[in-house]
Image (cartoon, rainbow, N blue to C red; front, side, top):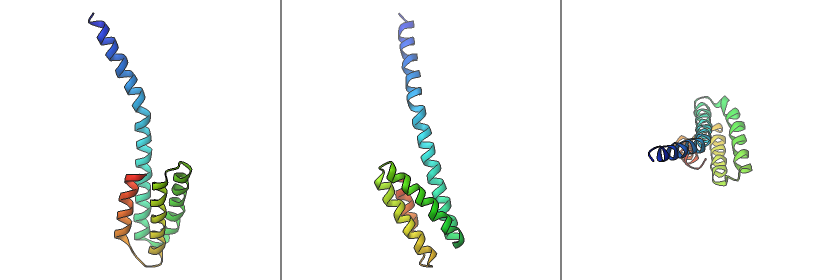
Length: 108
């Protein structure tokens, strides 16, 4: 009698672990993408020469969001691109970039 509940709990535990491991990997990838975008934006505001590279990479993320039908994420990435273009034209909006990055973290 005692071994039956133990085997059942063990089976359920193994099942749950197998179920959630792929989700953790997905979250890790998304977190990595966010950190990469954050680093690109920071570099752009520190050195205008790196803005062009940041725009190209953020545009790639934006296209992937569109393909994956993550339209709220895509919209925020487009807003970030516009903000970086304004930064390149010496119309700095660093506070707006911080706000956009916060919403990218939430929706992407």
